Length: 316
Image: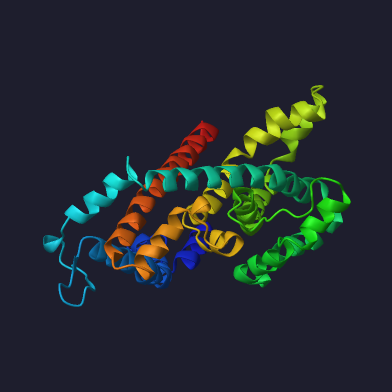
């Protein structure tokens, strides 16, 4: 019976020598549409960015001439951009981007972890309703939500009115005039749903018997959370952090809409947009994309290595 079931699942005779090969071919064919989509939407655009970054400029039209042949790549302009990032005028922009993304990540953790924990462990019958409310922001365009906050953060907007009623300020602060807390707040607001949902999934899968065992051994609720729940949720916390950090570092429209693209809050994404769309140096913009991808690849590699290490430790 087991052999027959296995054969039915794999699409061949489990006892035949070709059974394993036919099953592998079946799953490979099933994954082929996704693989083709990945090549079309990631590999090809990434290679196009490399061709632009290492390409040239038409001497007459002053337009980009991509170098599709790797043998024709010119690394001199890319090296100039790298030197500007490490010790040049772009160093401050990269540092500012890292600080903004780090502060936004802390804000997402402070706000999102309690929400994810409550929905996963304490919501009970209201879990479905709360999950629906968490998904609700995805129904509205990100840009539309940012434009709504522009109205709320104006000098005569509701935010200043509320602060004035609570006597927490003069009530006439210009939040949209290159104010860095506005950018951090916008990043937290825009990306916190992407933080909560994967963290909720990790917390929801926690083995409740471990928490019960901790309580049976006399641990308090706080001690159980710090010694059991929080360590077990670290893989989910890291996954949620990676999911939001990647787009945060390349974000440019949050600063553009909430501060008018102020140079005081300029991020890497704003520089990339400027070079690619507002200047005659598209190679510099493509080079910044490559450098940012390298930084994010390091973060992703650290995450994957941490997950693999935790899986080996749990298996042993």
